[in-house]
Image (cartoon, rainbow, N blue to C red; front, side, top):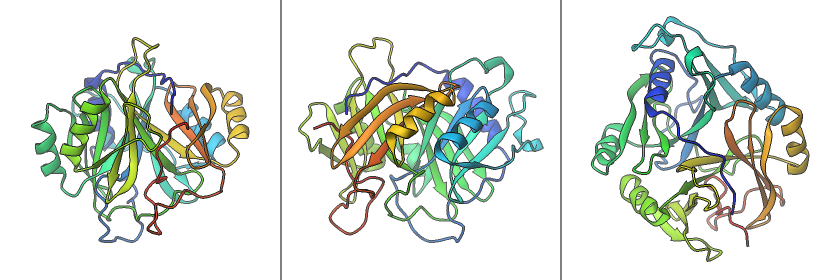
Length: 320
């Protein structure tokens, strides 16, 4: 995949204040309505959008992806421990399943571009934090016990990419092909893909493969032999670009969805491109600046990984 990410540096301290405030005592829906013992460490299971305009973001994502939203939550637990600023949280659902959250910035930071933060499943968040701390990571938001959800934290990898950790109290999501409206793939854009791959392999015990297309500096992270994410180079023609994770949502009828992006006030950053295994990809941003991807599986379902199950889209998003 050769996209030009629309990324910019963001204040990690500011994100920490928002995230710690928003999750301090707020109850979030469990990943699984019926608790299970499923454990899939390394799987991307959640995403939060930090935005300065909650209403605009909510209208965009519900209008574009058919997601539904919970009413804004503003309990006393949303008051930051570091100030008296209030943060509001909205949960987004796809076909009744929680898929993402919207977190409001305070007024003083409302003009900053929004950004998505993905969360990786971990078996022991304390063990993982100890490991990443030894690998030159920064802890952006320390461990929080979130009612009904579990334990979560946010880190900054050695290159500065922001990533959440989630130890779910209801078990991890099962290995199932993503449905329309769900996150289907994640890609890390890095100044040093080889070094980044080494870090994630050591920190999260990912498997590590070269791109099936043979593309240089493009790697695939695997769990149990199943691809779950990709790592590739930052674009050379964007000198200010910084390392960042970009998530892709599965859609049906990519061209029609891209048309709605602009109607709803968003921006098409990179138009549709053909990918591997009969897929098409595009990169867009919402009206508040949050960057994410759209992916369409032309065969209707995610490719099978050869074992009868799929994790995320089970293919690396590369162009032939």
